[in-house]
Length: 203
Image (tube, rainbow, N blue to C red; front, side, top):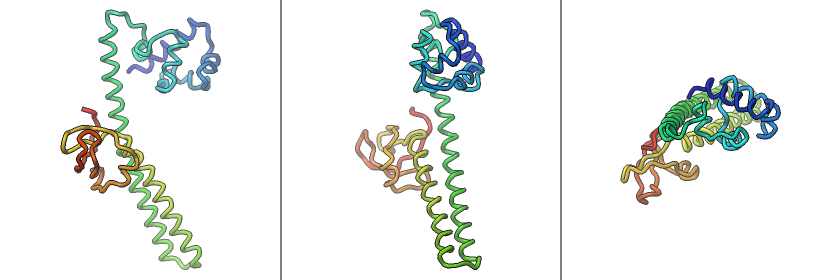
């Protein structure tokens, strides 16, 4: 998607409706800084306010994502193109998030071992030693909770029995036996348990 083109389109439509950035921001319940970022192509409107933005500017979501008012003859073609681009963007974001999960895991583990080494090698009161080890474990647990949330929501799990791809509940991810990002879970489609691999695409 051409963020610059979309930004110029938002700015043109806002001006057509005789709205300042501040006025549009107030109607959407956001800051005028966010509107400025859209119009300069630095970011795209969040999905949660796209419909409200389109309503204010009297355009369709398809128009917004194309950066122009789409004629009826080209409407279906543009919708398909935008859907493909959005799926591609989601897959790229999921890949980055899953890479981030490994980084979080490695850093938190390194920090935990560092705290244990410090507590074991440096002379200090027992209370301080226990506190340092507790700090290491607490940060590790928090990091693992966050990393598991990333693993749960980024991409899909593919059932080895029926091939169904889905996003499991957070609880089922935590409770499942695992080897890396492959988890032994029950498929919501066929109801059978299997070792399910993490995949990026829905199909």
